[in-house]
Every structure is written in structure tokens, then in C-alpha cells.
Length: 540
Image (cartoon, rainbow, N blue to C red; front, side, top):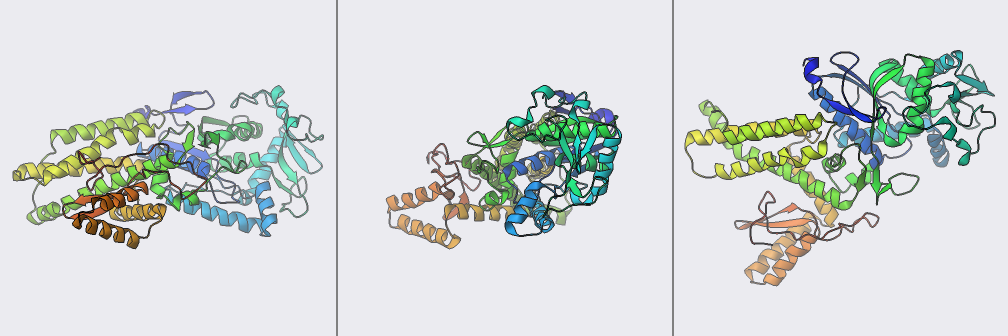
């Protein structure tokens, strides 16, 4: 795609605090670095949000036609890793390797694409020491008893990203200031070895790198000192990213990153979710009970820069939305299969799509390109034209069951195929499609719903049989109670002809499976629904 066609993509730059037209340093190519996790434990929802936010960016840039080099690091040398390893008696590198692997499992579950490069600190000690040496030689760092500190007062633009003024950076208010520092805000580039900690030889004696230097060294290693996008969570703006800017500039005065992007916090009861506060949930804790696609839907249901408040009700809404999407796509596939097989056998040529389908596709395509190109407005995409497209599919499937002329039938089939294709294209860029079939996803969603309800499938089928027998006996109080009790647990029973089928639904009562989790804020009356989950009039 030509560069001028790509010029409409606008992203929010944390450096300038405004949206800017995205322009790459090299036409048609994007260089992007995102700060990854410190691998000492299972990753939590905050980590998931950062990963999914920048995965959306990565996918959309490629959708626009860019060739993207995406680098996301692992911190596998750090105080937290050493502390945890000492507590468990495990080798720190075995510990960090294990949790790097666990993180990648979580990322695969969340449909996050694998970055182009995933460097680790332990594999880049040479580049880190070389950069520290360059910073010292350029006069911006000093060595004291095996430690190397960056001299912040020598950086004229320190604070340019965060707005922090050097005179306001009074480090000693919370942590005792190292008296060897020339300025309280000076930070460590290299830490002298301590007993029982891993260390490497260096010009300043054995030791290990400080936290901030690793990202400057690894980003320059893979992307040079000048690249397009640097991303991470909003909590990294200060001090991590501010210090990155300072040390990268000190190593090479021409260092420059065009766009700084930051995703918002995940909160719990409007308080930042974090391990230190003990109010966090790991990705595994959530995906044990909810499908990973439901979690991904939840994570992109708010704009990436906005705070996202964790609640069970929001996860239930996302799970229900994902079920509706995949049930619609599966029904479309089931309904069209016999027609397509018959058409291929007769070698029939399908006519052009109808006007309603043309309008539906156009609206979805325009909204998708417009809103995604305006700083990735995923919430609008999830609730906008894609919902109209799914309604079009459902209403067209109903029409397909009616008698009609052959040409009109063929036109409707082609219309459904094209709308389904456009919906799938949008879902793919959002990372909401899977390598699994629609039917497999639906089955997994059902299994998760049964788990949340505390029911085995056999128990549910027994209750359905009890309800059938109650209806035969005209014991409608019992029949209604079984249905109401199941609805309260997130299981909707649907009378389809003479058959009773079930699907997951939003529980009409608080979820009690995890006592720490917020309950559903509002009780909802669940009406009788058809297979899609669409309300049957007069059954509430």
C-alpha cells in the first residue's frame, strides 16, 4: 500500500500529549519496541492488557500493509527474580525461564501474535556493558565502588516525557538516598555483585545491570537508536521510560523515538491492580473460568489508554458477546453448507449480493478503518457496525428458510457469504478469531459456563429431563423453578420445537465461585430465547 494511503492513521503520542498522524522513519516499515514482563511469577491482568493492546496495534499496522519489526523483551535478571528464587530455593535463571514459558502460554491463549524478537537481559550482557561504557565515556555516568550511576543533572531534557522536574524528584522521601550518589535522582546502570546473587564480569568489577539500561541496550540492538514506536504500561512513563530516554541520549545524542504509546491501568474497584496491593488476578485465574477470547474481548472493550475496571459482570458480558458472535457464524456455516455443496456440484454461478448486504459491508468496512485509524478505538468496533452485520446474518438466515425463487435464494447465499467474510476480517484484526473451528469455540464456552455454574454436563442434562417430566405432569411451578435456578447460574434453557437446548447466558444472580470477585451489579431477567439467544416476545 502506498505511503500516502497510510497517512490517515493517527496515534496518541505520550511525548506530545496529542494525537499525531503516523509517519514511519522508513517508508512502508515500522520498528516497534514494547516493554515486557519481569519473569518471576504468573502474569496478571495488567500484563495481559499491555500485551493485547500492543498486539492490536501490531495486527492493525500489518493490516494497513506495513512490514513490522516488533520487539518485546523479557526481564530475566532482576531483584524480584533473585528474591523469589531465594525464597523457593530455585536457580534464578530456571525460575525466570519457567515463567517466560508460562507467559508465552498465556499469550497464545489470548491470541497474541508472537513478536519478531523476544530478547532476554541475560542474553544481551555484552550490549548492555558496551552501552554503559559509552555513556561513561561521553561523561554522563560515574563509577563508585563497583556501581555505575547515571548523572541525571547532566541531561538537559530530563523529565521531557513525564513532566517530572529534577528539583521535584526527591528520592529520599521514600527510600534512603545512597550517599555516594552525586544527585538523589541518579539511578544505577550497573550494580556491584552481592553475595548469593548472579553476577557477570565487567570493567567496573563483577555485578549485574540496573533495570532501565536493559531496554535501551536491547532496543538499539534490534532497532538502532532511532525507531518508530516505544510502548508499555502507563506506570512505566516514570521512571523507566524517562530514564531510558536519558541513557539512550547519553549513549548517542541522535537517539530518537518518534512515538511513545502507553496503555491504561486495569483497576479493581477503581484501584490499580497490582501484586504489591494484593488485589490482582492472574491470567490463569481468569481463563480457568472464562474463555480466553472472552478475556481478550473484555480487555479491548475499553479504549487502550483508558482505565479498565475489572468486574465479573463485564467478563460475563464479554463471554456472552463472544458466544453470540460464534453461534451466529456457526449457524451461517451450517445453513450455507448444503447450498454450497449443491451449487458446486451443479457448477452454479452465484449472482451479485443484494443492496442490504452491500450497505452492511460498506458500513462495517468504513467504520472499522475510520475508528481503528483514530488511535485504535476498539470499543466502537465491538458495539457498532459489526453488531448490525451479525443481525443481518441472523435475519437473512431466517429468510433463507422460507420459500423463494432460485435466483433470489442464490443472491441471499452470496450476500451471507460476503458479509460473513467481512465480519471475519474485522475479528481477525481484533484477534478474536482462533485456529479452532466455530463449533469447538462454542463447546469450550459451554464447558466454561458449566464450570462457573458448578455443574457437570450430566447434572445439567438430568435437570433438563426433570423439567421435561414436570411439563408433562403439568407441574409448571417446578418447571419454571428449574429454569429460573439455571438462569441464575448462567445457563439458559431454550424450547426449540419439541427439543430443549441450552446455552450460556449472563447470570441473573451474583457469581459466587470466587468470593474475592465483585458481584454482578444488576440482576437481569432472562427471557425465553431462540438458539441465537434472541428474545422470544412475551416470555419475560
